[in-house]
Image (cartoon, rainbow, N blue to C red; front, side, top):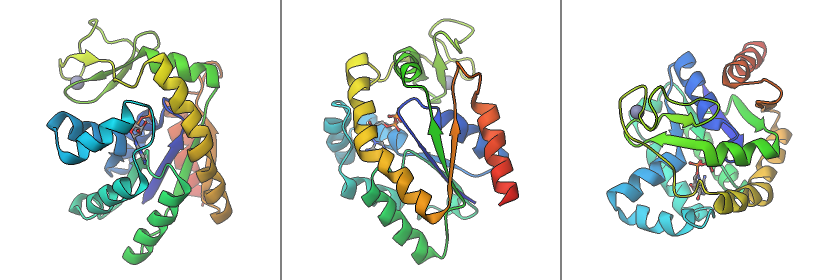
Length: 219
Ligand code: ADP
Ligand code: ZN
């Protein structure tokens, strides 16, 4: 099972990926999380990625593709995987096709998460992440039981460096110009499943995940 999550920043990719990861018992791989781990460990990759991420720009394609190629060598992806945040450019999508073809694998579904634009900015600035287990919270929609503390592990909740209003506006712009065309790319191959996650429309992660499961069952 190979699932790709596509969507704007804070569209809910990670949350839906988490539900699907449990449902299918396959790992969810977030390129953003891998970059952030490298940044906190001060690796060469982290130092490089940070210069782009702090500006709300994409990390260069070749760097990102190399990182994914090496991650896909790990044995835990044998039975399937979810990619959360990759591909983010048409070039990355083409490279992924090459990589999967070499392995004799193919994508089952590309979940194209649509969202209401005004909700994105609010979600980004209200987002808090556990510094320990990476669980995400929303100070308004999904606050932790104790302010600033992770319900799951007791870790400290922090705000990501790029989750400020100014950087969020730039990230949404980058999404529109560089990532939105990836949906058109997959539309042509017939694996695109477009769905909406919206507070206003009362469509949250579990409903979205259920629809993805139904799509996969009916394929
Ligand atoms: P969000 O979806 O909220 O923007 P992510 O954690 O997916 O958060 O990504 C954070 C940042 O990591 C991006 O703004 C970008 O700088 C970098 N990044 C993540 N995935 C990719 C990718 N596939 N290609 C290039 N840069 C990426
Ligand atoms: Zn935690």
